[in-house]
Length: 316
Image (cartoon, rainbow, N blue to C red):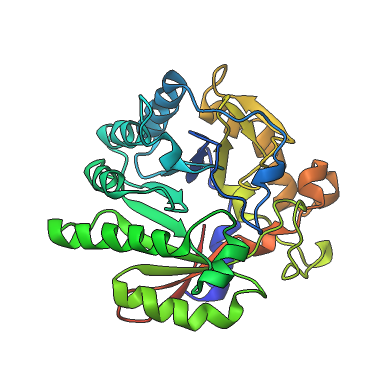
């Protein structure tokens, strides 16, 4: 896919149902990453109730089993690795309903051997692991509170276990958020993880709707295009509130609640109005958190595939 066709595709309204749903199954996190807003999040932390989760999955499975489901919106999933129900129970339920694209994002710092085994057994389709570094020094400045060597060993074990079990799932992606502090390590990062058998994901920094400084976001509204996250994704926090998009971490704008309405109803009410504003380039009419946001220009990534070193651009 060319960059031009990619951009054209990602700004299309997904229609009557989102292509991607992000679920706040847990919004606790064990790190204090420099590029992340989590440490300053104002809304109450918690876990998504099982009955709310199953309600959401049941509707998605009925509407479109190929909808991508991110099992975590803004937290570390392995913090509920030993809860009852656990993150693995959540994944298994989604897969039992026939969902084809169930994915997880993690920092892998507490993904021990038992959790790695359960991750594979759960049927998870893909896991995206944020590392952002190729040295202990850089890691300590970006992934604050984590242990670089331990994290690398955890990922290596997951890759080794996959190989031993002769399974393709889950696909393992290692993520590198490109910043001034780590840019010099990018090529070494790619080479190292390619040799380990992981797919490398390079993505631009986001500002979390202006919450942190992202100097790479240089365009203004005169050059603005509709945001991929607004056009095609639905983000649901642990209380059931549906928020603006994937970077509305404090739930600044609530479009509805899934305890009271269906996903389809919420998607085609206030969120539809926001999408139409994007389509019509009426950005000044958007809610403040969306109107002043620059993250629309960062909703894409480059993937370096295993062995081939072939790069492609792709939406989140």
